Image 1 (cartoon, each protein chain N blue to C red):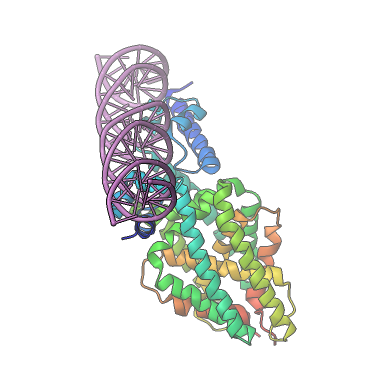
Image 2 (cartoon, rainbow over the protein chains, first blue to last red):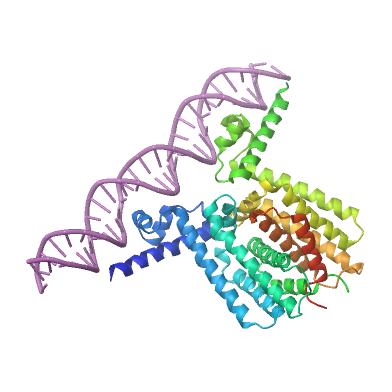
Length: 198
Length: 198
DNA sequence: ACAATCATACCGACCGGTCGGTATGATAGA
DNA sequence: TCTATCATACCGACCGGTCGGTATGATTGT
């Protein structure tokens, strides 16, 4: 095999091992040695490909967010009706919770680290502000096309994200096998139509 | 001074030091030695009063939740109108974010630890399910008195908690000095009346 | 005297990261 | 094409330091 191919393979196996271990044990509880053992690679190989333990942490997050980005943009482009688009995006949350559950706990660690570490902040929070702007634009579109009430797009976006994040956290901590696809859908319906009596 | 008084004073100063350090540096980054140094106490004193590092972590959380409990019950008893009660509870979130900001990051760590550690889970998640039941009962009351639409109380409670948690996380990660009191209030209004056009 | 309270000294495990060295494929001049 | 040279990929022992926790003795109120 070519040298470069072997290299990328090694790098990838390290990343996969790290992703798995971070998900199951958490970041702090996972040592570089464990990652190497799991990947079947030496510590030297690890530090040849990655500068620090944290750097692999960040690369993981960037990949993850990139995937989320693409999904959102995809839905955004394929929907005409804003209300329907919001519901579709809600389904992403449900999917994320039902499918990618195991590796989600990392997010909580990312966030708590982001508060102190500027590098982590840049890689996690800054993208979230991009999402907020994205939702705000979507809400504005809804207002323009008359399907949404005339409310502050920025704040509404914050509410939407709060809903997403809150559902994510609850999904992580709830043990019972809830159907989050369903719950998130209903939550968005509630937000759309209000819970107060007419 | 009496021996027992001195003991409780020591215990309290340890707790205060731990609370402060956990808030500023995080749990893992804070060592027992640092807590002792900050409290002006020896390691022997620490392990005389607390079994492990984690035990102090848990005691902190229990105190915190107890305070939250009391606030919620207080509002619950003092309000007649459910809609108004919900808005008042929203203000708690705002208060919590504006006032107790510095020590909130611990929550994220608590949650991420709760996923793996059964003891932490019991101390953090189980209370949250109590809150959910509490909100569910409140929603049910709203339905009965006709101020809320007839919807599943359990799911609605989940939405309310999602909103609270989501706002909390955003409040932690947003750098700008937003007025979360205001934002949370508007969020609840949005949820109450819906964002869709009539 | 006796127990509660605290201080000091210390242990073994482990951690992230480094470093000297090797193995192996790429490259280029003869 | 054969070979000398070099860069990349990788190995694993090792380091300084930190950590949570313990063992033991001093102090102090009762």
